[in-house]
Length: 106
Image (tube, rainbow, N blue to C red; front, side, top):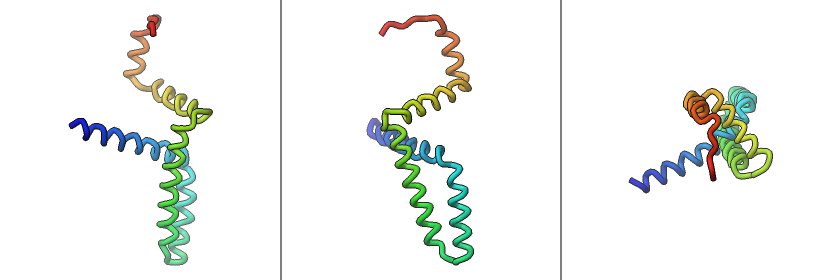
């Protein structure tokens, strides 16, 4: 059971790299998709479309990896992104309201 959790955790972690890169470049995908589909219709050749899709997937993965592993402005961006999500998370709001004013010793 522990090995399954470890494998699933690693898979979810790697998936988060792709998701971060995909989310950051989501507007580019429409332009690339439009150009690729247009080329496939005109030339009746889907190889370029397939290569664009694979290249875009690899680019998203690499960009997401960089966003998580480069401790600079990108790292601060990831923390800011999480904080914005926590502003609308009911659980985080409840915990913050209950812990407001309490001091924890490290």
